Length: 72
Image 1 (cartoon, rainbow, N blue to C red):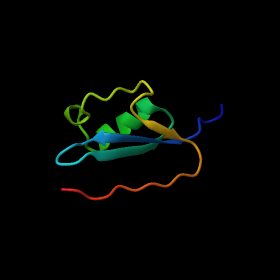
Image 2 (tube, helix red, strand yellow):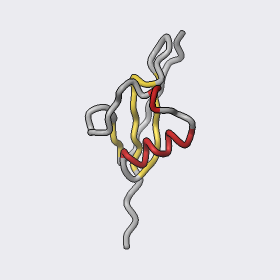
Image 3 (tube, rainbow, N blue to C red):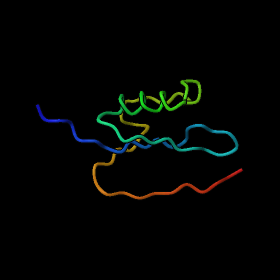
């Protein structure tokens, strides 16, 4: 059985305090990505109602770069 390819899943507009935060995970599915983030310490109340329906995250399966400026 072949393993499913890992993809990078990125959510922005999460973990909002004064500015929006970003959450990311390298996983096989968006559901697995959220599970990994929950295990890393993000709790449901910090997701600001995001759904895992393909509308609220970006999915990358090739080379990608990004950054987030600090804010306050």
